[in-house]
Image (cartoon, rainbow, N blue to C red; front, side, top):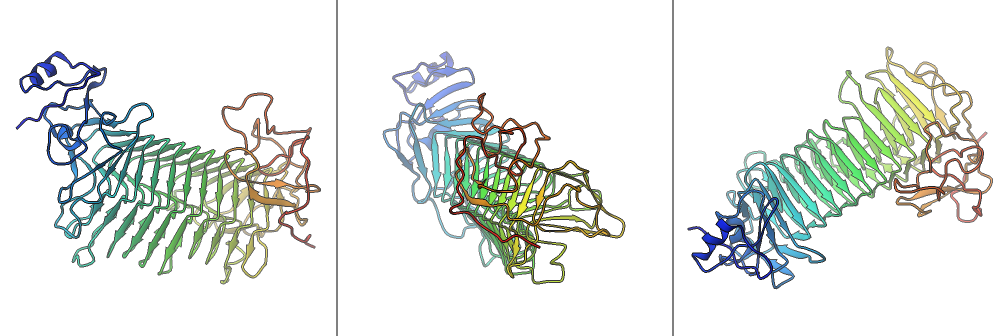
Length: 559
């Protein structure tokens, strides 16, 4: 039976669609450049022709069409008890509200409990293309199969998923505990074989749980790329009963992850098995780029011996610009960033510019950043107040601040105008920069002028060329607490008398310090440099600043 669409008092249909609909006393809505717009006017889920489920399933709804929810006489569409997912058979479909309208689609009442494969997620996109949601909140979708893997608690697509001004929250993907085979669980909120794109959107409080195998993407799993602009990925959770799980918030299997003016926070990835990577973000192959963003409060936890990357775990290259990585945790190693190439054929680049890595911690080694990228470049950044347990013989080469690791391939390292300080083991011993190498692989540092302040370092001659000879050390840099000092991210201010003031450089020709944004124009609010010489680190004291010593994170001068 062909289901036709309701009349819309505000729009007109294509002639063919109107003629077909007229046979049943109905009328379709106006054709737009990319297809027809079909209006939902019934908030029930009972199979009536004006409902969301029926309109999406109608033969006359074709690829490129738009399903408009703004005519629905409700704020929430509750999918009916006993029903399963809404199948989307169109390659490209937009489901949207218009103007300031916003609507919630609630799948909490859908068929629940362990099943043989019936999916009670909200949307099952069945063909390759792009499913777009605009002005929509999805909540309560759930997948709980007993014989197959669980993919996408609210959305599953073999193609792409796009969210615009939308939210995916409180969805779950779970494998049954009684399953006899190992069941993968990918994407607590969203699973896409292709790309996931978020604009002014939120993916929060979703969960992915596997009783006996791996989890990938507590919030989002993408086979391709993930791009988030002015978006939030927060409070998502992954819990695995097997080995090798990735991404409490986001996991991209083969593509890149790009964050812009976005936040990844409070996500957790936990496993009882061996190997759990990336509490906030993990990438398997692609490049990770984060600009003007915050990655904070994420955790990676393992009952076994290996957990890495409380904030980020990345096999590919990485670029951080005006981004803060703070207060992330790993139970085993690498509390903040794990930028680790998987093999000896290492061609990765790690680049960090005008960024802050602060307050990250681990129950093992390396609290802040662990990197082995063949080319590593860090400019005008602050790495401070990260902590590590430091309970093994490797303490001196895998320290709590910045740990450079050339054990598998050589590293060329450029450090310019960076501030590394107050990174400590839980015993209170400080180690801001450490290096590790093999007998055939060395670390080569850039020459002076480099203008770094590194309070303590362990760089033995056998492991690396020496640090640039103008490197400052020993004294306390007098950093203020991590807080909102202006701009989109948190920073550590330099307080009166700091050795970092007027001892840096601006080799990257930045117009502003970390607090600046792309849209800024002259006269810049946070100019770099402010005076004749730049300050060291991610924060530039402007000439008009009144700087106080109260409330700072102090430290004694070292011998």
